[in-house]
Amino acid sequence: MNIDELLDGFTFDSDRPHGGFDQAGPQLICYADRLAGSIAGVKELLDGPLARAFDGVHLLPFFTPFDGADAGFDPTDHTSVDPRLGSWDDVRALSRKPDGTKRSVMADVIVNHMSADAPQFLDVVERGDESPTAGMFLTLSSIYPDGATEEDLARIYRPRPGLPFTPMTLGGHKRLVWTTFTAQQVDLDIRDDATWDYLAEVITNLTEAGVDYLRLDAVGYVGKEAGTDCFMTESASDFIERLRAFAHERGAEILVEVHGHHSQQIDIADQSDWVYDFALPPLILHALTTGDLEPLDHWLDIRPEYLFTVLDTHDGIGVIDVGPAGGGTPGGDDVEAADTVIDDVPSADDADDIPEHETHLTVEDRIPGVLTFGGGVSVILDDDGLDEEMWDDEVWDDVTIDRHSGLLEPEQIDALVETIHRNSGETSRAATGAAASNLDLYQVNCTFYDALGGDDRRYLLARLIQLFLPGAPQVYYVGLLAGHNDMDLLARTGVGRDVNRHHYTPDEVTENLERPVVQAQLAALRLRREHPGFRASSVSTKPTADGMIITWGDTEEFEGIINHRVELRFTALTAEFAVSASNAAGEMEVVLTHADVDPT
Image 1 (cartoon, rainbow, N blue to C red):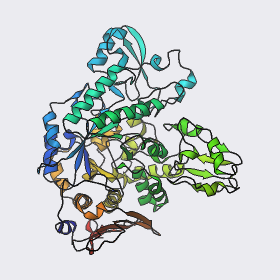
Image 2 (cartoon, rainbow, N blue to C red; image 1 turned 135 degrees about the vertical axis):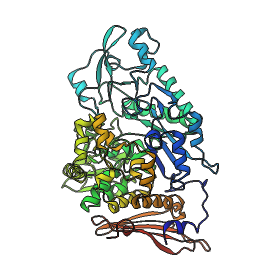
Image 3 (spheres, helix red, strand yellow; image 1 turned 60 degrees about the vertical axis):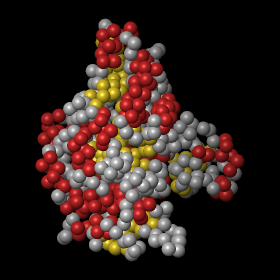
Image 4 (tube, rainbow, N blue to C red; image 1 turned 30 degrees about the vertical axis):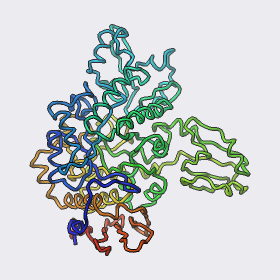
C-alpha cells in the first residue's frame, strides 16, 4: 500500500488544531517570482499540484522592490507589495485554502536595516541631522559618541569581511554609516521612535493581510551596545520582547532568525514563539556522509521545543550553528566569559554563590551544557539541570561550566565542508567564501540535493528525518524540486547564495514535479500533514548500531480507541530506510522505502 491509499482510509480535518509534538503543519518556503512568477501563481501551485502537502507558506520578501541588491531583503518600501508580484489582496487570498480554511502565511520583517535608496534615508543624505528621520539610522558615533578604540571595533561581530561601516556624505558631512551586511542596507537605530513607528506599520500591514507568522530577519544585530560584540545583546532581547508583544496583539507569532552557537537557540527559545533548528541540516549531512549519528542524537536530547525545521533556505547551509563558541562566532565574547570555575563545592547551597553573567549562563539557570569535574569527569546537563544529591559528592571540586563545545568538532566541520564541495562537483566551493562575501565557515552555498551528490535515496532520507522529528517542517522550493546549483545565475550576479535561488519556468516546475524523488517528498509531506499518528503525545528516537528508529505513537491504551503510529527506520551510511504507518484499522504497513526512488 502506498501513502495516498493509506491516507484515503482516514477522515482528515484540514482545520484541526495542532498540539503536542505536532506544532504546525508543513510550510513551503519560496520567492513568488522565482517559483511561480507572482503571489497569485504561488496560490495556484498550493491549491493545485502541491495540494495536501502544505498547511502554509513562507513567502520570501515581496515588498518594493523584490529584486534589489539582496533579493528583496533591502526594500525601499517595506509597507507595500511590489505591483509586479501582486497586491495586498493577493496576500490575503493566499491565506485562504479552496475550502475556506486558513492557510498560514509567514513573511519577513526586516528589522535591522533599510535600503540606502529608501526615501527616509535619502532625506538624511540630503539634509543630514536636520532630517526628521535622521535618528532612524546608525552611524559610528551613535554607539560610540566619544570615539571607538581598536579593541571596540575588533570586537564587533559581522558576517562579512571587514568592519560594518560605510563612508557616506550626510547633509554635506562625511559620516561612517553602520552597514552590517552591505553598503545598500543601512542599519536602523531601534532606540528611535520613528524606527518603531515604521516597523509597527510594517507589522500592521502584514497581519491585516492575513500573515500570522513574522520572521524577524537578522534580529540578532539590532541591539548595538558599546563594550559588546553587538550581537544578541540585552537591548536586542528587549526589542524582541517588544516585537513579540506587538505581534501577539495582532494575532501573529514571531520566529527569530539567529545563526550562532547552538546554545543561543536554546536561550532565545525562552523569549520567542519559535526559533530555527539551524543545527539540523549540517548534523543530518554529517550523519549521512559518515555514518556517525552521535552528534545528531545528542542534539535531539537538548534542542528547544518550538522549532521550525529546515534542510535548506534562501541562505547557505549554516555550519556555524554546530561549531564551538568563540573565535569569531556571534556571541562568542559572552559565551567565553561565561565559563565559571567553582572551587570546592560540597553542597547545593553553594550554587547560589556562582557569579552571574549577563547572558545568565550559570548552573542555577539549568541551561543544558557540559560540566567538567576534577579528574576529567564530564556530565552533560539536560533540561532538568542539576540533581541536588549530585552536588553532595565531594568529586565536585573545580567545577567548570563548559559552554564552548560545538555539536561537531572543528575537524568534523572541516571534513563536512570538504565533503559538500566534493559531492557538488566543486560548484559549492566556487559559490562559498569570497564569492558570497561571507566568512568561510559561516555557511556553505549549495543546494541540499547537491550537498548529497544528487543521490535521490540519500536525499529523500534526509527529508524523511526532518519530517519525522518534532517541530514545524519547512521545505524550500529548490529543495522540494531537488534542484542543482545554478552556476549560470552565480556567473551573472556574483552572489554565492544565488546558486540555491533558481528562477523556475512553468515548464521546469511541471517537469520536476514528475520526478520520483519529488513525488516521494510530496507523499511524505502528505503523510506528515494528515496521518493521525503525527498527533501523538509521544515521540521516541532510538539509536541503533548503524542508524535510528523514530516513532510517533501514544503510549497509553484506551478501550475502543486505536493508537495510531508512524515509524521511520534507517541506516545512515547505506541510506536504506522504511516508513511504516498504521492503517485505519490500526495495523502497521510499510508505505515508503528507499527502493521507491532507487530500485538498485
